[in-house]
Image (tube, rainbow, N blue to C red; front, side, top):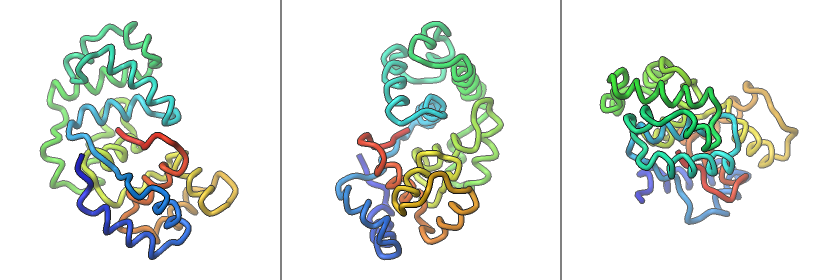
Length: 206
């Protein structure tokens, strides 16, 4: 597993800028974000993880991966919805996974060209697919394209991690979170990952 090229520099920068976040970073000296190179895998896993805890998402994903065999657009599209339901997926998420599969099969999205696009352009393309909102697109930017400065402000785990770190009452407003995030630029993806890490024994992955 390759560590992102910016990871060590980001850690050093964040530790210098923010002693509270720095404590969290120092607690996990060997941990780092690792990415999956398969765009479909990342997006499917992000859909499974929508609006549930990291541990719940992990359990559902493990059942899903076991039943589908290989996570690819054709196999997911052809999988019977009752089989998907038995993994713990809601009817809505099953619909979203089928839509994602069709988008890949019909080439409505072309991940190869995303390497050279700005973050917001990629988000604009992804949210055209049913079931992919901004949060899911941001997970893709962090976990697949490994973009260093993504701040998924609507992620409840991130907000909880920030509140715990600074000993402030949960939740805080989006505006306050965005304002606080300015000091973590240009490595907000790294800061986000450590806030998640502080909450859960399982490192977040998509």
